[in-house]
Length: 293
Image (cartoon, rainbow, N blue to C red; front, side, top):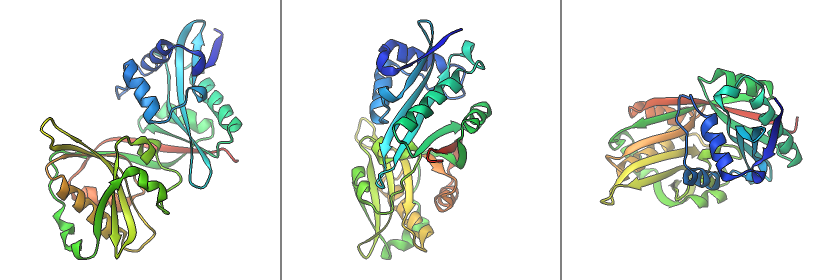
């Protein structure tokens, strides 16, 4: 079998869609999409056709990798592997390795500093492949949820210490302690119509929560998704996070809350969510490859 690797710019939309949906058959999580969903995902997540690839067996698309590039505030270029998949009948034949190698070669050409990806924790074979290609696990990512969340009243006592203000998510670009590297889908640039709750003490910014809310047909907030919860390098991190969560749960009391790709290393927020009775519904690993090495 002679496998040909092509850039997405050389492929039809149907080939891209078929490669994605066929490639993710049999996985624990259903990520199949229609054409509209695929195009929307590529737009929102800054996935780039000229930096992404499809593997072909003659005219048949048999594998795909979607990539995106972004520049951090420091000027470093960060890459994301937004999905690598191979059709079931072509797995275990080195197709995935070929797609990752093509991606890494492109990263080098584009002067990428850090390559990132996430993988489901139970997908041991994929994780082993990424490790062989130079990626390392740097954190575990937690996905948690709770229905009809009540106000986190334990932190109400902090009202005299801190204040909160909701602003547009794009204003995070000016925050001096916004991290260079976060799980790609939790970056504010990936959160369409997102908002940020800033936490202050005496007009000094101490922390933030990046979130998105959606309403039902009656205009009531029904779902709240949290993408990031971070503080500046200060001593009272737990209090700041507790207060931020108090403000959100008070403002949107009774809504369903979901936390996406929370780094386990963010132990203060993990502690808050455990105290609030959230439960884990999925885990991923966060992997990085230093392209400067």
